[in-house]
Image (cartoon, rainbow, N blue to C red; front, side):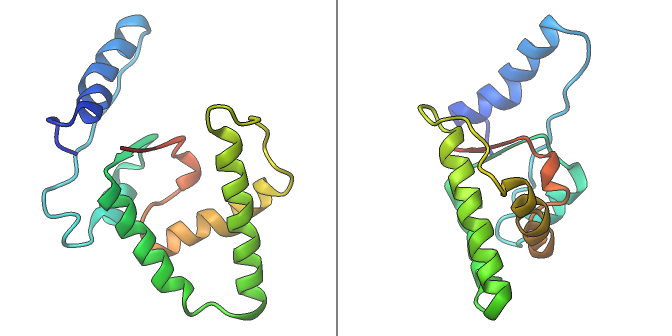
Length: 139
């Protein structure tokens, strides 16, 4: 994301300065290449850097969604039922974690996350070990 965007500037520049000013350690910031979105290599970049925080503009999230929907069109039967259940658990979890949400982890979410949600991202090539990405930020 370009640093002319206020969210990118905050996360990519100001954030690491503030965090490392108050505790020992370091932070590493990676930037996608200009062609990553058009060439659909953003997944390769994510697998390489394995981010803890991932900041993306809506078009990045749209590309990820399109890829996942294309894969989902071929899913049928029991597998589709399991995937739909896991997506419902993921949505419930996300809504609970929003400001004003209950903050509770819904029952069955951990199983859904491990057996469907993480593996679907890995199959799409959009991330690796997404269980390590602790924050997804949409701006």
